Length: 209
Image (cartoon, rainbow, N blue to C red; front, side, top):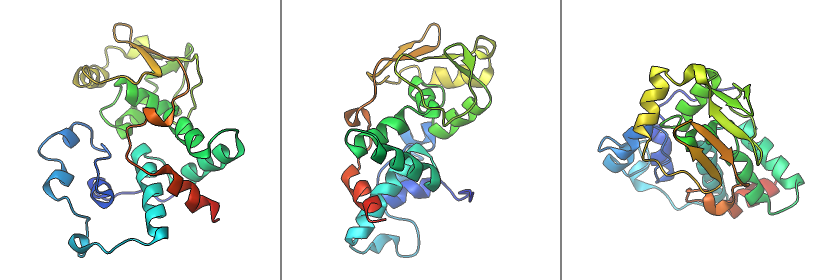
């Protein structure tokens, strides 16, 4: 699988909004999109009007980059959402929100989803009492996610949680800051996702294939 190795701030500039890919840097005066609010590249300042396909592609790329998943993973989530009952776009975002790396990020275990994914991979969390180090693990309603007792004093975890102590926790997730434990109360809905994107464009894009 191809790995993106360029500056991730270019992704925010391409989409024209903050995707919060760099954690605390995104909230500082060093944020690239605040300093250069135009698309990267030679012709970034003179962006042409997008076609219908271009708008659909940008919507998909925006959502994919926001959750830091690959093209293959994103397509897999869409295909699963299409097969299940309910509105396809709602089910798609439900799956993406319930990924363990995203749940960890929502808990404050990571200043960005990339950092949260790394910490999950290091085995920092357990789900229902069992260690899980797979970032793509899909949590379910009722699952209890906890920072492992042996990792609570880890310098990185302590620093990250301190930096995120004022972070708002979504209503579908219950978080006990004292015990560093979260519980999935319900399935997240589209209104819980703080991403500006026209999800119907994503469905239109994939429905052509």
